[in-house]
Length: 193
Figure 1 (tube, rainbow, N blue to C red):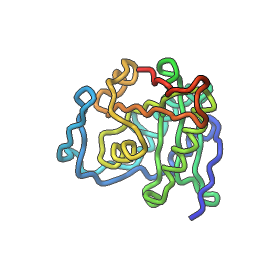
Figure 2 (figure 1 turned 45 degrees about the vertical axis):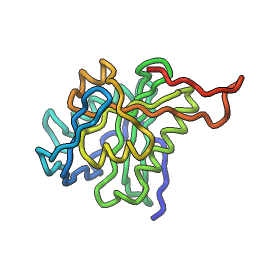
Figure 3 (figure 1 turned 120 degrees about the vertical axis):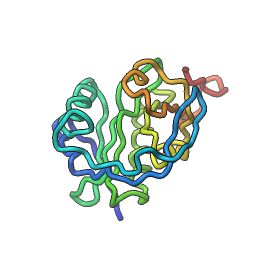
């Protein structure tokens, strides 16, 4: 499978409906400060995006993400040929040097084929170009989402107030961005907290 990553605009947000976000889950996490507690999932099936409604519907998600894109967020899509198989959004600066990974979805039939990794690598590159020193994500507490972020260098962090107020049940994680070249004067960069 050959995947191509390309930039998208706010007018493309509705294409999220092309992605099948459904999944079966066995484990979910609860966050206590910087600790994760695994427990059996209370909801074992996550449905696809709803075509209408107030929660997890395509119109609600467009309304949430459009201002992020219009404010300079970087929306990207992963394509196999002309088929959109994944979408991700690099959002606003949450604290000095920390950018938010606002969304990352891969369509169910295309998972475990490095699509999410390709999207993550592109977001990391764009974040470094923007001068970020870390990425922050508020991840759904499923084993697949949390496992993906842990495997890609994220660690649980004390939640930032804004994202925590929006998603108190999510798992809040931070990933330091290692510079592609050593910082001037040597030494390691410090990730803001």
